[in-house]
Figure 1 (cartoon, rainbow over the protein chains, first blue to last red):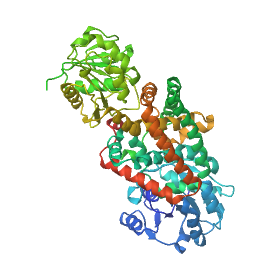
Figure 2: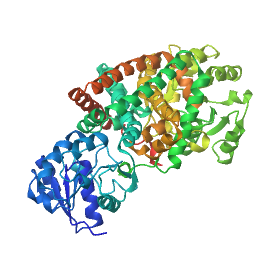
Figure 3: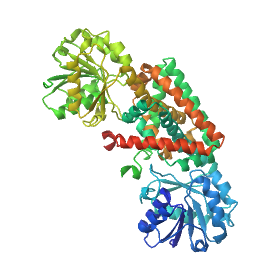
Figure 4: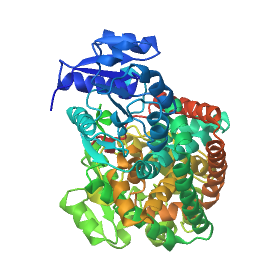
Length: 300
Length: 300
C-alpha cells in the first residue's frame, strides 16, 4: 500500500483537526492541507503544525491531493462536493465523515465527476467540545470507522480509505448506507435528541429551580448535559438529514416510555423491575463488547 | 461534637457498605454494626473488616446505637423502621439515605416512638454496580447530602447526622421534603426513567439489530446503558414512591420532546439550532458549578 503524500481536510473542526493530528503522528511526512472558511481555524492549524498549507477557498491545489476528506456538518457536504468538483482528477479519492450516510450520498454522488472515487464513511467518535483546539490524536483509536460503499464505488479507493483510518487506529466495518442510518439513529441520534430534550426542559424552568437542577445534577442529569453540550449546527443537520430513521425510532421510544409511564401510574412494580432487569443485561453486553470503557477523549 | 461510638447500618449494599468504609477510614474506632437479610452481604462485611458485628435480625443490640442509618430500598423503609421501633431509646438517632423523602417520612415517622429523633436525609451519590463489593470509601467525597427535616426533628439530632456525613467528606444542604422530591425527579429520576426506556427499546429489537446497537454503542447509547444498569429494585421503588413528581416532570419532558419531533418533521433547522444552543449553556453552567467532573466512582 503506497503511502499518502497529500491529504486535504475540508472543515477543520474537532474531527478534521483530530484526523490531522492522528495522521501527522502516524506519519510526519504526510502533507496535510487544511480548508475552512473560518480563519481562526486555519491559523490554529498552521500555528500548531497540524497542516502544511491552509486555504479558505477551493482551487487547483486540490488536483495534487491523494485524498480529500470532507469534515463539514452533514448539511453542507453536498455544496462542498459541488465546490470541489471542478478541481478533482479521476484519481482523487473523496471521502467524508458524516454521521448520516444516505442523504450525504444522495447529495454528493450526483455533483462529483468521478462518483466511483467517492467512499462514504463515518468514524464513530466524538467529543463534547467542538473546534480544532478540542481535537486530539487518539480520538479514533479503537473506535469504529464504518464505510458504506455505493454500487459505483471503486474497490481500490475503499482500500485507500481503509488504510487512512487504520493509520489513525480505527477498526473498519462495512454497512449498507440506509442500515447505517437506522443503527446510528438508535445508538447515537435518538440518545442525543433525548438528551437535548431533557436538558431543554430545564431551560424552561423558573430561575431558582434551574439553579438547583444544576447544583444537584450529579444524580444523572449531568450525564445528559454532556451529550446536550454537543455542537448545535452538527446536530441540527443530523436530525434533518436522517429525519426518517430518527422519527421512526423516536416513535418506538415514545411507545416504550408510555408503557413505563402507565406502569408507574398504576403501581406495577413487578413490571418495572422486570424491565429494569432486562436493560441491565444490555448494559452487561455493552461491557462485554469492549465498548463500555471511556472513549479516549473521556480519559483526558 | 462527641465522637460516634456505635453506628448501625441497616441494608449493607452499595451505599451502606460505602458509608461503613468511609466511617472506618475517617475514624477506625467507630464500631459498626451491619444488618441485612442477605448473609453473603454480612459475610462480606465481616471478612473485609467493614463491620464489627453483623445481624440478620433486629434485637436489643440496637439500644446501644448512637445512630441507625437505614440504607434499604425506599419501598422497605417504613417496614424497616417498624421492625426497629421496639428496640430504640429516646436518644437513638435514626436517619436514612432514601432518594425520595416525603413518602419515606410518611411511612417512617408514624411507626417510630420518638419521631423527633428521625432525620430524613439523602446522599446524592451512587454507582452503576450494586451490592457491598461495589462500595468504596470515597463515594460521598464532595457529593451533596441533603437533609429534609420535619417539624418535629430535634436540632441536635440534625447536627449529629451532619457530623456523620461530614466525616465521609460530603457537603451538607437542607430542603423541604416535597421540594427535594421535585428537584430529584428532574435531576435524577427522570434521567433514569428515560435511560431505562431508551435501552429498553433495544431489548425489543431483532437479535441482529440488537447486536449492532451494542457494537456501535459508543455514539451516545453507551452512556444511557450505564444509567440503565442501575439497581432494578431500588429504582422500581423510587418511581412508585415519587410517582407524583416523576409523572409531573415526565409530562413536561414529553411536551418538549414533541416540540423537537415536530421541528424535525417540518425541517425547522433554526429552531433546533437555537434549542441546542440553549442546552449548551446549561452544560456550561453545570461545568461552572463544579458538578461536571466525574464522581469518584467514575475515576476508579
